[in-house]
Length: 322
Image (cartoon, rainbow, N blue to C red):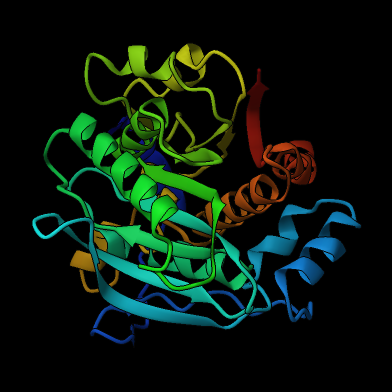
């Protein structure tokens, strides 16, 4: 979880006006915030899109728009690991007929899978299937991490539970807040994932440093502005992961901006004074670029290179990697 400080309140009063979100109804009755316009790039397959993007300079702004692919949204898709273990998920299947990477999203404390609806839809529009999972949101995050590892392992063994177009060698885990801790624990527990993307992660549990030291997969930390809002012990992730970790902060962004829409907006008639769509789009473009690059070559090199312009203009700051 995060704790806003006095500077956060001042920043919100200065820069965050209330705005009304127009709600659209999806299958299953869940609403979402209208997203950005669609890119003008054309591609029939992920292979075509990947060849084009990797053949040009990496640019984060490209990923601010929705990708070129249509997405089949299946709300409240029941994922059964066994006769007694079932999970509510939202499934976003990208249109290309080939096998595609899978991005699995996990919410944070007191939040829900719906708080990552636009992120999942956005990633899928760029040729990566997405699965947003609902786990207990006030329970043990160590337990959630181990559950997430079991879910990833189950999909890896039996991808047909999500369809016949899952590339099991390119599963990517994404978690927000305490969900970031759960993703890290899942990686430490041997989840068959290419790596993890942590959205302003907060440290959960006394044993988290021990888990972080066991991670052998690439990790990208996309953080909010700590002068605006503070995620508990976010520094743990970069400090204790031994290698293959990169971190940036997004200037002016709040903890809730790492969701899209935020859980607060979902519960309050679509309004949230602690978020701006500009910051939410910055988070979603960064996670999409990072996931796209990780799926392409198993590293975050492409995603990191795409940040060059925002490093230059100060929108991203405090970059570090090891």
